[in-house]
Length: 62
Image 1 (tube, helix red, strand yellow):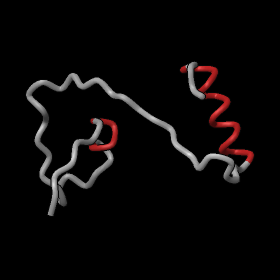
Image 2 (cartoon, helix red, strand yellow):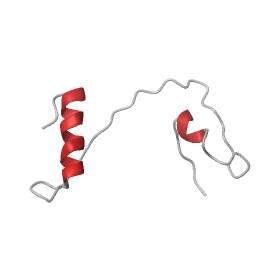
Image 3 (tube, helix red, strand yellow):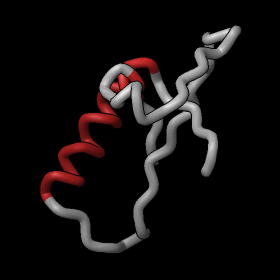
Image 4 (spheres, helix red, strand yellow):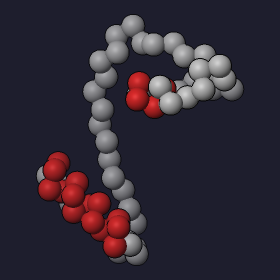
């Protein structure tokens, strides 16, 4: 048993009969996302491409 906060786009995909969904009264939330990986660890080509895209779009990732 637990509680989680999910974006509406995810909740819309859930089986509503299996979960109790309660919308937030103040639905505006500011998201702070982070990407982490092991320093000097192996990164697949796909992971390196994803990091390149996020650097281009978000900037400032180092």
